[in-house]
Length: 370
Figure 1: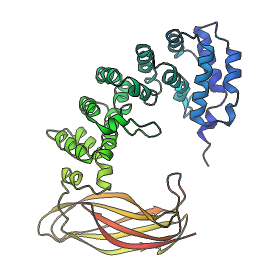
Figure 2 (figure 1 turned 90 degrees about the vertical axis):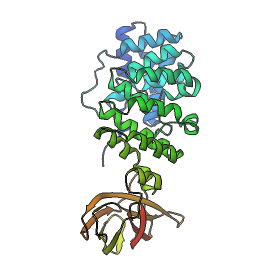
Figure 3 (figure 1 turned 135 degrees about the horizontal axis):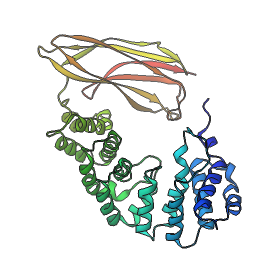
Figure 4 (figure 1 turned 90 degrees about the horizontal axis):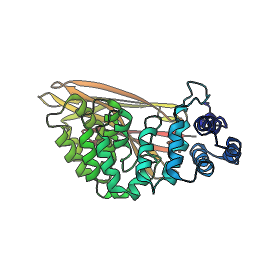
């Protein structure tokens, strides 16, 4: 089993921060800071550890916030003494972002300056959200400027930080209700030269589609006009959840709005009785019944049994088939029933459907047993 990530976020993190700050601010009382930072530290998970260190920083840095931020920013590139190659290396700056989010709301310019620097070393996508909640107009205006920033990390922040449903972060209800300000930012970034930014744009648009399916489809359709391959990828990635949900407008944008003239046959789900932890193979033929060539979007869906006995559908992506007239293609996919952090399995009959252009057809079922 992999080592928990929190194990890489031990006492050496506040030690490194103290070392960096002391290099630029000799009056910093490192021993007292360490005492407060480590009090109750071991019992905390990763993100709470970052917040705990931020609170200790607030206690031992100057009470004047602009001075405190100046010290933190001056310390960012000082030697920290931590080993190279840690998977959580950039999380060294997590407490800095939490310090800004919690104590910098009344100092907009100083906090924006800090987040501009911090997002180039870690990410300010979480800390920026409190500023959207309190200073929406000003933060949007700053993001509009940052959309053309030379730093790819700052440009990505413009998209990632404005996501209405950013994972592991508080939602932005204002943008969930009215995504227009966010769409204006994404429009500035949709042709960014870096995939790192474009992927964030796609994820943001995907978020918007969960609250506003019609807006997602309309935006995707507009963006496809004269689109480069890179922008087409953004649209396809942004529509992925809507396609899984079988939303007709999203399927139509991608050219799969019509029912597929195809049939499914020779379905095999093996084994029929699956012990939890084992794998199940799903295979079937898709045949073009038309006298014309056609593209068919093929996915499949497993209706997982929940603890309540009800089921929840999970769609798995397969592929887009380019079928010549009367052509038959066999597709196969193996799915594990091993326990995951994102899915707990329960015994019972699991129906399997195949989706052709988003329209479900029952394929069969397997029995999952403990």
